[in-house]
Image (tube, rainbow, N blue to C red; front, top):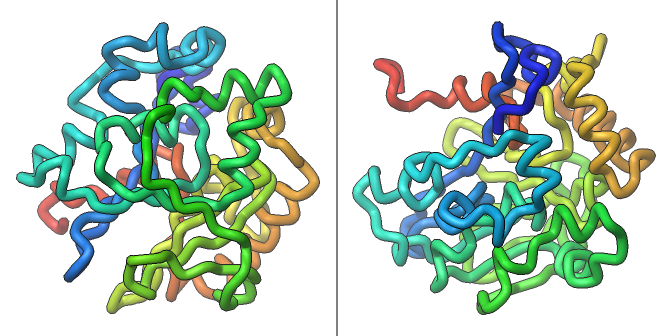
Length: 269
C-alpha cells in the first residue's frame, strides 16, 4: 500500500508516496504442513479490486496491483503448492489481512470467535468498508476460539490452536478490532510475536519515548474500534518489549522497515 504522504506515513520515503507492507508469516511445521499467518491481499483482490475491495480504501491506501507480491505467489516461488498450506491463522479479518483466503481454499482457518462475530455483523459504515465478505464468503474450515487458556509473558487468555503444535499461540490484543490477536511462535532461539495491527510503526514500541508518524497515528485512531483498549494494549506490549526484547522478536503488519529486518534473501539470510 502506497498512500500519499511519504515519510509522514512510513518515516523514510523521500517522495510523495509512502511504502507500507502486509507482513505475512509462513511457518513450516514437522507434521502439519505449512501454516500461514495472515494472507495480505489475494490474487482476486489484484485482478478484480472493484468487486472485492472498498473504493474508499483503494483510493486512501493507493493499493498496488502486483500479483507477484501476493502470499500465494511468494509461497509458490519457494517451491511449495497452495495446497501445502494446511492452516491459516488470522490476526483479524480486515481486507488487507484476509484477502488471500480464497487462494488457499483447503486450509483450516483459525482466529478469535469475537472477530468472526464482529465481521458478520458489520453494523457501521466503517465495518462494512473494512470487512469484505466477498473476500471470504464460501470459505469453509473456520475455527473460532474463545479468549481463554494459558498465560504468555503476562498476557492472559492465550489459546493453543487445534491441530497445530503447542509452539504456536493466539494472543488476544484487542483495540484495533474487538477480536484482534497477535500470533506468538516459539523457536529454538526465542519467540516471534506477529503483532498484527496492535501497532503500526516501529517507534511505538519504544518504552521511554514511544512515537508514531502523523499519518499512521491518524489511521490507527480512525480504524480502532476501541481506542482506549488499543492504547492499553500498546502500553502492555511496550513493557513486554522493554523487558524481553532479547527473548522476543516483535513485528507488526505494516512497517516496511520491520519486514526488511527479515530479508532472508540477503547474504546473511
